Structure formats: C-alpha cells, structure tokens
Image (cartoon, rainbow, N blue to C red):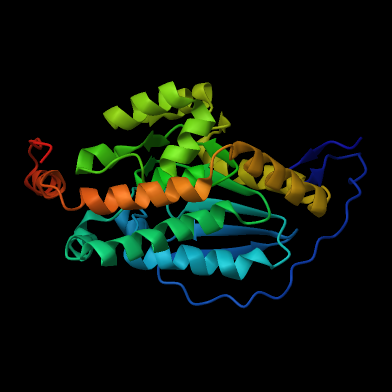
Length: 293
C-alpha cells in the first residue's frame, strides 16, 4: 500500500488509486458573515468570516448557516471542513455588541429567532456528508455549539471550549448543546462544564473526548483536510449511511424534542432579571449579581 502525506504519494511509491469525485456546480448565495471555498477532491471549507470580531455570531450569521447548508446539501461534496477565519478564534459565541437586537424582541419573536438559529446549526449537523471542525482559539457559547455540530473535531493547542451560557444568564440548553455535549462526553462532565461555564483547554478536550486530537497550530487546517481527503476517498454512499447510522443511534430520545425544550427555556430566560444584569455587568467590567428573579 502506498504511503501518502496529505494525499500525495511519497517518493518512489505509486500513487493510491481512488475514484475522482465530482461536485455539481454550486450556486452559492452571497454571504456577509461566512465564506465557502470548494477544493479539489469534492471537499469544501466553510469559514466563519468575522475575524475582526473573533468570528462572533450575529442574527445574520444564523440565517446564513441555514442558507449555506442548503446550498451544500445536494452538491456532491464528500466532506466539509468548518473553521474560523484568521488566527485568533474559531468562533467566540454571539457578538454582545449586537445583543440589543435580541433583548428588544418579544417572546414570540425571540422564539422565532431561536428556531432560526437552532435550525442553522442543525442543518450543518445534518449535512449528509461528514463535517470536520478545525478549532483554534475560543470556541465558546454558540461557537461550542457550532463545533459540536461537526462529526470530528481537531483542536490546535490554542483551542478553548466553553459552554459560557450561564455567564450571561442563559442555560446550556442552547443550539443543541445540551443534547450533543452529553452524548459526546457524558452527563457528569457535561454538567460540570455547563454549570461552571469554565474554559476547557485543548489537551483536556482531547482527553475527555470533546476533541478527537490536538494538532499543531501551523498544520491544523492541513491535517484536517488530510482526514477529509481520506474520507472522500471512501464510498460516498457508505460514508453517508455511516454518518446517518451514527447520528440516528445517538437519538435514543428525540433531538427535535430536545430543541423544542431548549428554545422555550431560552425564550423564558430572556424575560428574567439575570440576563440584563449579566450583560450590564459584562459591559461595566464587574461581577454580575444574579438573583434568580
């Protein structure tokens, strides 16, 4: 068997035989917050593209997650790599400079937004081909939820994961996090991470199964793409059905029901005193005083 590095045969050895995957011509919409690059071998890279804001999420971005997934779903891709633009962050959660947009919403309007947001993350998770996340820097709050939507996560030494929702007066019941995290690392670890909102470094993430492995920063994308190419070299039908089997077998209870419960919980939590207090404390650079009212 030929040895390869990033899909290239080593000197003196024959190149591996593999089918030449093809990708249908993609009609991609214009994106404001995301960027998609289609590579050879039926692989694409989806970048969260707000590096000046640590790739933080916005209302527009959640709409664009859904639009991107719809555009890619039937494209003929065999693997998608998900990462953040620039070197600072994978995705630092929701941009708090835009939080006023959410706090001005009524409950029904917020619930509609929440369903759009969860729908965008869910659409990426349910893409029929494998999604691999290359995580560098913070993957916090909604950024953690985005990383959890991937089937495989490689982490640079700079990676930091956090279910930071409790620090802004919300719960871990956000964007599918309570569903995916529990199934990935178990309820005990998920509870500790979710209740404290603490940072989980790359080495710990790999040790507990939150990340598949730690990869040097300078080769993070290359190694993630190398794995994507290994996947793309396999039977597309077999890979797709393998993904479907893995995901469906995780759903002993209904994923849709979990999202319904999360969405309503978040809608109610935005009506409490603790969320505006947390946001005010963040802006004033002081500890928040939570009352539970």
